[in-house]
Image (cartoon, rainbow, N blue to C red; front, top):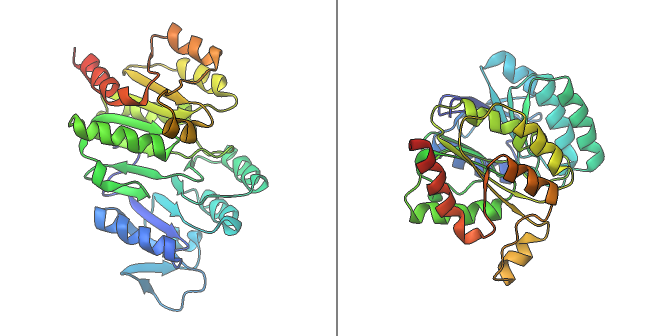
Length: 288
């Protein structure tokens, strides 16, 4: 997806020494992601798995061309890793770290206000352009290239969607799973315009959880100029346990959000089992 990344986008990996980072770095490399450097402050060698190592993001950016970074650092070190990437003006930051302290994210959010960087996460599953590149933890075997853009906050919901898309032979242009923490770098309203600008995306599907201030997010999005069909599924906060043990799949009970979507003519569904049918409907609308 040109609006975010492709196989040519040069990535850094911060804290590349860690087992978790090492595993997913190799996985992303094998998929086709262009990883041009790793950050390892105490490294005693120049390369790791064929990737040149640097002591800081600042040094890496001065030595190699990089437009994005993946962060796998432990929670206590994540704040500094994020601030380093923002200070170096890395355009795209994908943070997969879970459990970052709220006070640390407040510092990061403040730094983002003065920056042009786009932060996906924290606790993000990442993003993927099928057949092009992967940044994060997403299950590559479930994707095929296509024209449906997917934005999700929940990995569980996304996996259910992907299984249904496979059954219907529907492909994805780009999928972004931005996480479900209270304080996030980007929301649906921040990311949706990228899909609007992307020529490979013909329709957009949003899967999320009920969160505070969701009505504000949707007001922001609905105020934008929109040209592509949008479908929505929003689960209650306890959807994981609820969806697994109940035959009902509740749509968000937030009446204001419900009203906003209805007035704007946005397709919404109340059952997880209908996600694939909704995706097919959205793509059909854009070809009519």
